[in-house]
Amino acid sequence: MKKVNIAIDGPAGAGKSTIAKAISKELGIIYLDTGAMYRAVALKAINEGIDTLDKSRLAQMVEAIDIKISCTENEQKIFLDGVEISQKIRTPAISIGASNVAVVPAVRMKMVELQRSIAAENSVVMDGRDIGTYVLPEADIKIFLTASVDERARRRYIEQIQKGITDITLEEVKRDIEYRDKNDSSRDFAPLRKAEDAIEIDTTSMALEEVVEKILLICKG
Ligand code: DC
Image (cartoon, rainbow, N blue to C red):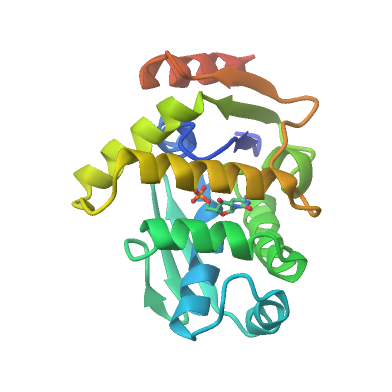
């Protein structure tokens, strides 16, 4: 099979990771969640007492960061300095921290290098914010997923509750999403933006299966 790169971008809670995982499983190719990499950077900063808004210290910190990813169909494990952190990075504080560190060009350059090297060697479904516009501008297929902010907050809230995170309200989840939407789309370097040649799908009132089916049809051309 010819190597294929699929880019799935969009704001938090649009369904990217669930949908990208389903696509990767269906096509038998790997799935790479690039958000996890920015989350790993945020975790390291927090562990080291570095403010996630302190651009110069973050730029210095990523010079020596050790992030490794093992990805297969449907599953990804991420390691920071040799320790698996796949679950630890799924908290509201890390979500905000990841959005903050992702503004720093030196952080992005480092992550993008790793993302491009994985895509160069594998067929991959990659999800993120800037995959179609910056990381893989030559991707074979580009999808931009959206949904209303209320629906995205609702999905994220349910996800958190299911994970046992109960000390957060729906309003707080919505506020965090709005903060990240603004932060991710207004940064100067590789902001969240639909690529001109991306196909936009509004998932607000669509079932997951419908979205997956639609993307698979696009993939089959
Ligand atoms: O997809 P996610 O919610 O795990 O991403 C966490 C943050 O990381 C997101 O708010 C912005 C940043 N991010 C990014 O800037 N570029 C990407 N390709 C992926 C994530």
